[in-house]
Amino acid sequence: MRYELYYWPTIQGRGEYVRLALEDAGADYVDVARRGGVSRMMKMMDAEKGTPPFAPPFLKAGKLVIGQTANILLYLGPRHGLAPKAEAQRLWVHQLQLTIADFVVEIHDTHHPLGPTLYYEDQRPAAKARTSEFLGERVPKFLGYFERLIHASGGPYLNGRRVCYADLSLFQIVEGLRYSFPNNMKRLERKVPRLINLHDKVAMRPNIKAYLSSDRRIPFNEDGIFRRYPALDR
Amino acid sequence: MRYELYYWPTIQGRGEYVRLALEDAGADYVDVARRGGVSRMMKMMDAEKGTPPFAPPFLKAGKLVIGQTANILLYLGPRHGLAPKAEAQRLWVHQLQLTIADFVVEIHDTHHPLGPTLYYEDQRPAAKARTSEFLGERVPKFLGYFERLIHASGGPYLNGRRVCYADLSLFQIVEGLRYSFPNNMKRLERKVPRLINLHDKVAMRPNIKAYLSSDRRIPFNEDGIFRRYPALDR
Image (spheres, rainbow over the protein chains, first blue to last red):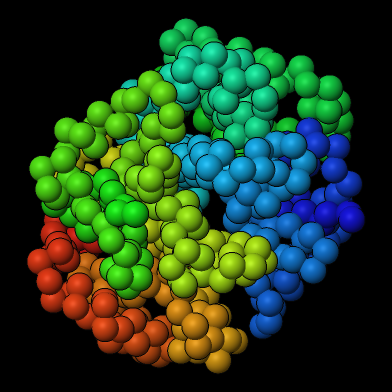
């Protein structure tokens, strides 16, 4: 079965967490909107029947249409060796992914504190205030949590020696924070060596390595979740 | 088995979505922190082993410790008749809950646009700007999405005649928005009659009705997610 991934074609965004899982798994998939399928994507969201998603990303898997990033990974994980099959462990990996999702919202809010429908340029002072709180309080708290889990499991991954989709997402978090806040990350990274090691391990996985150097990986840019605004990286 | 729910004892917050499910199901549970167990809750979050949650709420179910509101409901749903057992439908109900969770973040951001560790009093102008965008753009979009789903299913609930945990959460959303924005909701409610009908149906469910009139239901207040700040309800 060939999966169909539906997500905005010019950004990594939330779709990237799904792309990384599909790529690491070597799954057969098509990134529909990147092949001219944006209008098809919009049409599926407007569907009267079935399970129309509120927003991209969503995945078509046979007859299923699955929305919400973490929900897609919940579905893909045990099918592709990226999550255990036992319920207790599946719930745990999903819990980690949902915590990452909470973090992603806060990352997005750094440049959009006054709401998603306004431009960054219209909310610069608020963005500066929010980012300061984010870098000072929230990043250490979130990254420190994951560092502690890797320490407890023995590493190199969140749950020890077996990778799961939440590890792939953490790789993306580190990549993105380095892109957005290069100055601050130099300092922040020193406190989370195990997380940085996890990032490096994921980057060296053969399918991920091939993906990152392919044109399927969209470069970071200032339309996505991770944006480089030097004024915010004081 | 008696469930143990761990959540802040003085607010509805995110714990309320779990409380509503446990109450509707007539499940045997104890709200630990409300029985003097706050330090026990903090200790479980600091655990070196097992599955320490990043934040409350979390549920202890036998040996399992499950964090993240939507994840707890994913676990409880099929066990208590609040979600179908078949995978496709379970994923759909979970997708709806995750969309509600996204909405809850935006609701919280109305009074905390500059970040969760600052006080509302220190971010009033930003809160006003964010709330204006929220009421004008986001509330109609989210409520309209759920209205459309109820219409498509035939109602009265999201998936037709059988209630699911996401319906209970939508009840809470309407209750909370009415508490926070009574003036605006008068106007906004007119466009979503099916959602209001769903809210009324949930309120009349015997176990929910008994819960709402009990002292187990914590009143809304200005420490939770839904806060009544008249300056924001223009």
